Image 1 (spheres, each protein chain N blue to C red):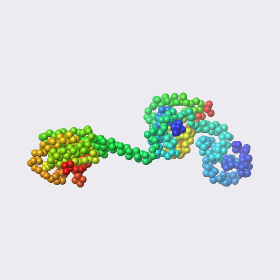
Image 2 (cartoon, rainbow over the protein chains, first blue to last red; image 1 turned 45 degrees about the horizontal axis):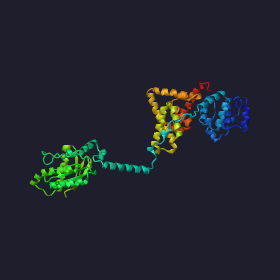
Image 3 (cartoon, rainbow over the protein chains, first blue to last red; image 1 turned 30 degrees about the vertical axis):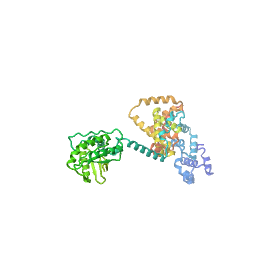
Image 4 (cartoon, chains in turn orange, purple; image 1 turned 180 degrees about the vertical axis):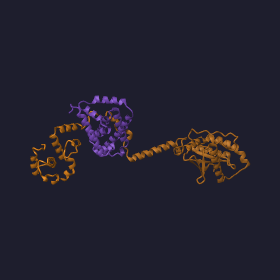
Amino acid sequence: MELDRNNFEQYLKAFQSGALSESEMLAFCDFLENHPDLIELPTLKKDSFRLSADFKKNLKKTAFIHQENETDWFIRNIENELNHEEKNTLAAYISLNNSAKETHDLFLLTKLSPDAEISYPNKSELKKPLSMLVFKTWQKIAAVFLAIFASGILFFNLDDKMPETATLSPKESEAREKIETASENIAPLKFLSETSPLPKLTKSTNETQDKKRTIATTAICAETKNLLPYNYQTKFPDLEAQIIILPPSNQFVSISKPEQAEMQSLGKWLYSKGKSLLSKEKTKEIIPDIIHDAELLFAQQLEEKVGIKAQLNTCNSSIQIAGMQFTRIKNNCN
Amino acid sequence: MDEWSDALYRFALKSLKDMDQAQDIVQDSFEKLWKKHEQIDNTKVKSYLFTIAYHAMVDYWRKQKAGVDIETVTNEVRYEQNYYSGLKPILDKALDRLSEIQRTVLLLRDYEGYSYEEIGEICNLNDSQVKVYIFRARLSVKNFIGNFNLVV
């Protein structure tokens, strides 16, 4: 029922008997304020009666609906933001105002509902891919270790691969590539006589066996007597350097990945060339300085002739070449 | 998951009006979900999907604004003709007239029932901004619908 001049007395009685709701009380007070000619009743001022805390809290929102704020009320109703009291107020408002009801109905139409006809056509594509199956953490860790282990086995079985390349600068990587072919380049650089041809070492394509290599090296020692080969190993079993010291001149040759046949050939060549030198001046003892000198010479030659920097480390008897450490391991002739 | 894919597809399709693009976005969203599923709280999976989809749509809108895509326009026409009759075409047209963000928040609100806070998380807005966008969207849709006497 809309409050107007004709029925305000009914509201007044209801107010006096406490039958009005809080919103109705406020509406009634508002009505009287707007129609001061009807009644002079100071006790009906808004602040003259007690409002509940919740109602006060929402007083601003619930105050009154009128044409200027009705849109806000309608939308809040759709958004389900009105409390029970407010819903009653809104219901009362639209029941007394046809224009407001039409507007309110239009707002109700703005509430969208999902179209059940629309569904994603290829749901199977969205299933969890097999590769993304959930693994427990320990399984993942185990898988990583397994992968690393498998990679390691694979790597160490490849003669021509050097895995540390990834940690090197481009320049160092290039140097490493040169090392791979060093067996071809280093050996002829300076050995006894540069005029004599040195048997060219070719890169190994077959897997080298340590046992055969040792036999071959020993054979050289036997043939060349005082030629002393010093082996230098990396952590990669198939990559080996060798400096053969020919006393007393400290001449040397470096061999990577020697094959048995090549070693024998080289040994014969060394023997023929070294024999004359040995006959002129014999040095029975090889002192550490000579080894060091040979290594130093090797490093110098490496840089001069091949462009690879090598650094000696006397503490652990090693040569650092392109980031890779060649450690002196033994004298095969002893 | 079927329910989520349908909801996500509806959301994308209504927003983009392009079936292929909407399907791509659903696929991409699920792909990203599977890649990061361990880092996502189970209770937020759906919200994560909608967030991913919304960001993908924003990228799509930006690209679209850079150049007119005739194919999209064609799809849009086909889409309307094939799917709706009655009030729905009018609502669709009303939705088309909304700004992208207004349409997005309204779809999330009505289709998925997300709270203002959740919509804010998806669209990177605060609650007040979401409320304002929804208010404007409803008002705009209501005004558009009001022009069709038959509907009223």
